[in-house]
Length: 247
Image (cartoon, rainbow, N blue to C red; front, top):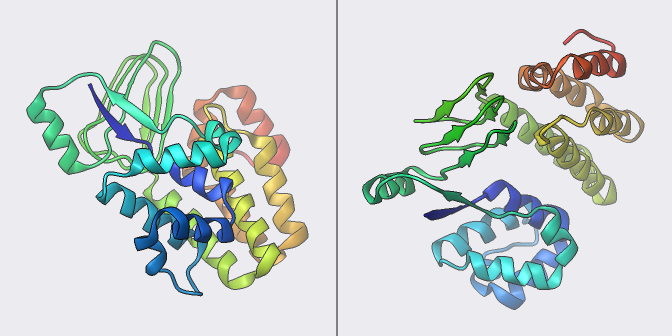
């Protein structure tokens, strides 16, 4: 069996578990090569990306996760797990997968949801699974399964984060980025959390109205609508009630 990191969970741990200042101090204390490359203008996202790239190259991902568990145990277990195990395939196939990138394997008879930019060979076995991601060489077996590419959706979220960085500063910027993260987490749930999505929309309306329209457009993105539909008629009805439009 081969384990592969769940990079989205690791990114969420660092983003939600640490402030910008804490990440800088963390790098200074534990990952000096990363700290040496930081500048006064380094954003939180940039620090996280540099940190993850560094620990992957140096094979120190376990070290990072152990330190996070010690320093931020609550946040650590909130975003757990951080590895997925590939349960099948030959040694040659494993080497090929490692070259291609992250591999996700889910085997279950229950409803599963895999969300993220997933490259490599993916295997999902079971019924009523939803696969959302950039998929290459994937296999989905079972009834009522669906697959959706979310490259454009992820780009829309990243673009919104960029606009937050240029339209808000200080505490407002930090809170706005947190709300975008909350929205991403809400739509990544096995059943989309529409209450949280509505809260985020109202937060932008009240606190950062310049980006309210951009936030609303993401709510009606095709990926969001498809996932709501896949979650059943009750959620479709709730979506219409909360957001006033047909899915």
